[in-house]
Image 1: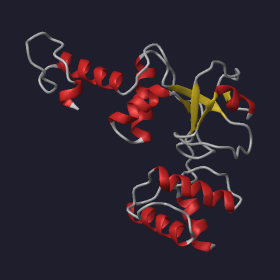
Image 2 (image 1 turned 120 degrees about the vertical axis):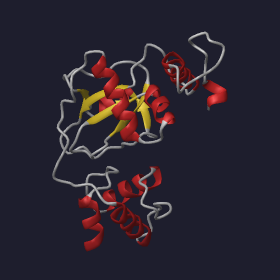
Image 3 (image 1 turned 60 degrees about the vertical axis):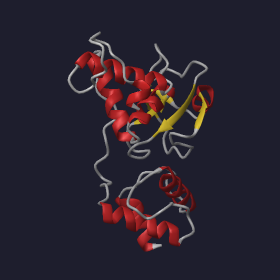
Image 4 (image 1 turned 90 degrees about the vertical axis):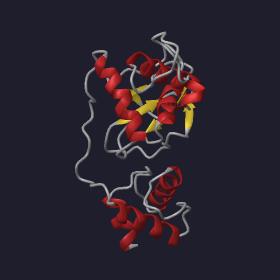
Length: 206
């Protein structure tokens, strides 16, 4: 990545991403450009879901904004969605928490560090530095997260029931989230990919 994207921005004749702030910032910017960053476009924005939303979600499930609009999704200020850009619906804490429509620039940040929580934190920090406000929807506190051992147990129980959760390694990746969504749909639960205490308890009792 250094050989591909690092740049000498301070003009001293070498690329130094450790000792030179200009080189470090410009190299990170160049990395994002190489990853598909579209200048002048947002990474995404917070949206509101209709009551009891059970539609699709996930970073890989991209649809036209008109599709999300037909499902009753609106920006948090209540305005309808507009534009021709495809977007994915991100539900980092399930349907009961904040929801986001994310665009190509979100994926560029994600490529820097493949964790949705990281990409969301960086994107939100950038918005706040530009004067943006906090998220409108509160993060839920009634569905605790899982320890590494509990995440492995979650994956093992999904696999036992025939859901493709990948390797039971305690890492909640796209395959595990898809398996959680499929299980929740089969159990009549809101079909999101959140790996929380509720879904683990449901797997334990079923």
